[in-house]
Length: 166
Image: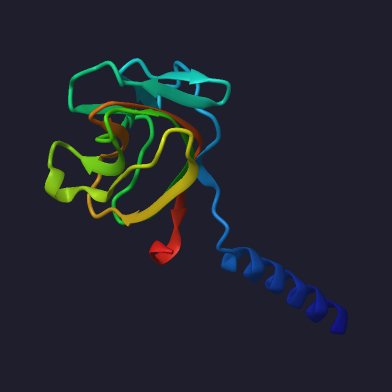
C-alpha cells in the first residue's frame, strides 16, 4: 500500500508540474523565408540570410508596410495575449524623418490597433523591440513598417502566447 501511494504522489506531482508550467511554445520563432504563406513581404522586402530586409529610401510614398501577417495562415485568437519581439539593424534613414513602426490590426479599423509604436534611430543602430497585447477580437494581423522611407533588417521575429499579458 505504501509503494502505491508513493507512486501516486510522484505521478500527481509530475502532472501538476506540467500543468503549472508557464512555458508556452511560440506561435512563430525563427527566420522568415520568401514564400512563407503566413506573411506577405511587401514594398520589395526580401528574406535574406535568416532576416527580412527592405529599402524604401527612394520611394516618395509615406507608408511602407513591409511585413504583414496573413490572418488565415497565422491565427491570432481573440481573448489571448501575444508577445511580439524582434531584433533590428537600421541600414539607412531618409532626411531625418524616417520612423519605423509595428502594430497589430484587425480589419481596417485603426481604433482597434494594439501595440502601436513609432520609433526612430540612426543608420547603423541595432536593437530589440517587443510588445504585448491582449486581443479582444479575431483576425488580427502583425504589421511592421517604415514611414517616410528608410532601410531596415528584421531578425529573430517571435510571436508567443503569454498568460495575463505578461
